[in-house]
Image 1 (tube, rainbow, N blue to C red):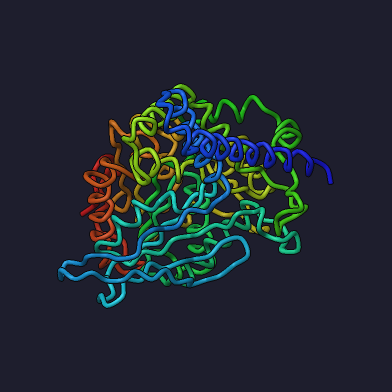
Image 2: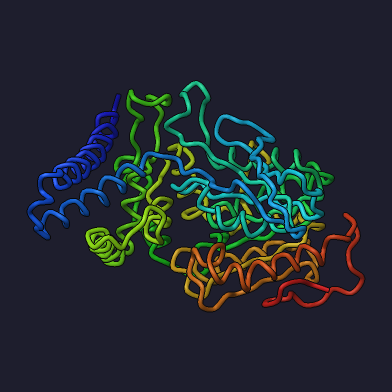
Length: 431
């Protein structure tokens, strides 16, 4: 029962703020008050509307919102989200475009388990659907997973990725975004040694902490300052009775959200102040830019405690991936065993979470891979989110990633290129 009261207290505070917003909106919108054109009432109603929506979104899983797709044939096709593999802690889903021929490119988009739902990659999915068959790892909220399902740490996460890759076959092209980059690299090496026929065709790592010490950030500094005992005492709580996962130890999404907001507190405060002003003036809409962003940003999920703690201890503190010492289910994973999978890294020049240098370290760890099958790209003006969503992704990074996939599409497993070139450090693909 330890920390269960704390978990319920956080939920009570969230619920109370949602109720305060709803009450303020209802009271200030009372029809009789329209006879008194007081700006204070308009502001109060606007504050209530923004507050209620914000705190309500924190417990709702966003919808993918991808229902139709206009193909090159000029027709609108329905998009069906199908579950390919169903597991307790996450599913493998497929965005099947009805009535369209199967695309040659098969892409597995590995979503992060870092507090947000996989829907954070909605715009990434939509951009890849244009000419790819897109599969996504859809991780579940830990508070909804019964304790009877057991633990889930970074080794379990890696084995989930191994199973997903096996299910999709060797022609899959894997793109890992942020947090899962080191574990996806490990999963690929695991397959390279134990099941080479199931290896993916290509592996693209976007803004991931392969070597957190390569370029220190506030995130890595925090990991160094805080002991594991402090983290477990202050961050881990037990799910309350109102959820299926009652009693499960988790790192609550609300705590993670507080960390996210604190990193740019002034920017978020200004965004909400401006939104309240727009609502009071009648200039806001249900799906304006503010609501589109914050409906997703504020929707958070709990992480299994063992996953959160093992990530900090083994990836950030222990540097097990960076030093090629990672072990999965008793089996030492050797990144040098990757010899047939083309690997590309993508970094953002203004990324303050996984700074430039952390992700590209993967190329040096792949000692068994010829330089001709390595590539990297740095988007100078992109921040952390910009390298997988927004203008930088659409205009610059996505075309380069697809070029890299196409350049390695015809390569047969086990067949190396005759004359390896130096590692291609800032281009899209290797010839």
